[in-house]
Length: 247
Image (cartoon, rainbow, N blue to C red; front, side, top):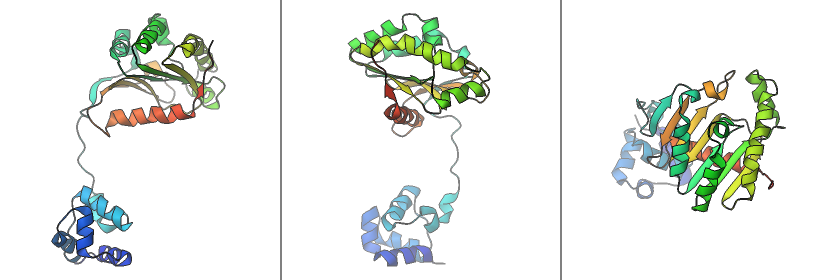
């Protein structure tokens, strides 16, 4: 049975076999088979053809709706921790110490780092002095999202005071060249600690404090993976955040 939806889409756009084949880099006979024999192209080719025709790829080839087999383990997953409390402070410190280009921290407060490692600010200054770009985004204690997080965790106003404490810790870094500190008002689904191509991602679970929630240690292995998903999330929050004045 012919693929009439594909035939109609091509006719509507004035496409014939050869031009469409040239556009998606296949043989014209392949396009002919797509139409007359209802053959389904490979996913990447189908997506390019659908984009060229201005159509939904699944409307043209419903067979592509079938789920692809899931990987048992992501190649970017180094370690999965049941909860943040299981991670030695040295894991965070070592990762940040090894950074040469990027350090990004996205949290609400995470004062545990300064409490467990009082030299954290010195470490960040040293990284910045060596040319590493450091960006710290902490929660705005006056944000309704921060306040709601406190209510969800049943801490009352505890998280707001911890955000203020975090601001006290990080504010002196706002005057350091190479370091930027901002406050954000977003709903935080994950805390992110990035150092170059490694990241520790602390999930947030309703009713559970961050120290009791899982953490995955990621190492970037290629474009478009899990690491890039979280790196892009950081960038999106950073664009909405407010710079902290020097103090």
